[in-house]
Length: 275
Image (cartoon, rainbow, N blue to C red; front, side):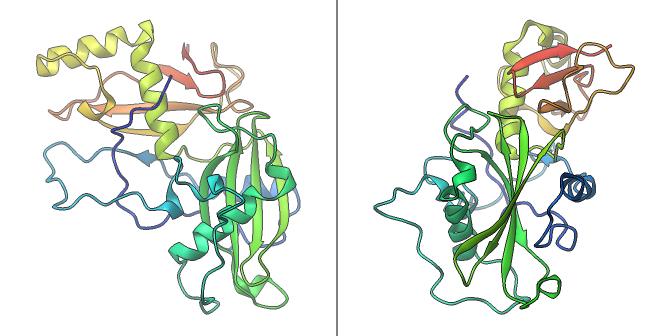
């Protein structure tokens, strides 16, 4: 299913961040990746609270955080993303130019070949980028730690990139590790949910609350979190190994719709009722 082209914009200037110290350079084991992700318990929020004023000027999606055709990973070999003109000081905040550059470098690493995004396109799904703690590297240099999800293999990829050297220092692969979903994943999950017959009860609730038909995610305020099946859960046993999310949605009057019994499996692009 194609993504809605009119997806809500983000209000941040740079990608969502994970813990800096735990996501530092040199993580070499899957357990280390799991520890980082355990800290990142934030949910993806795609639509403003009901009744809140819209921004005066929409914030455009910049290439450094894009997951579309203008994403740094999509840059052709004939027009590579250039290195930043200047390298920021060790503890300066991330910059747009650096994020775009390190994402491009990841796409050139052999480990990136053969990976797939949530929509099935070539290249793993970009999740986040942040600075690695300079004090945890021998030279105190400026490095980024980046996370991607490979839907082709259902595994998390963790990269450490040296900005000054222009090299990928390490890549760690971890199965069964599920960070919070991105905006793009959350939006697709809601679209899959609305297209499935299991969403009829949610649509009925929305009609009762508003008198309107629920056809688009943007009619609600919605968030999502990664879902991992527990030992007693039935109906979504593969969730955790595969990438799944649960949605929470509010009608314009503030009432919550009954979305939590339904789990969207983004890996299989299916919707399941969990018992």
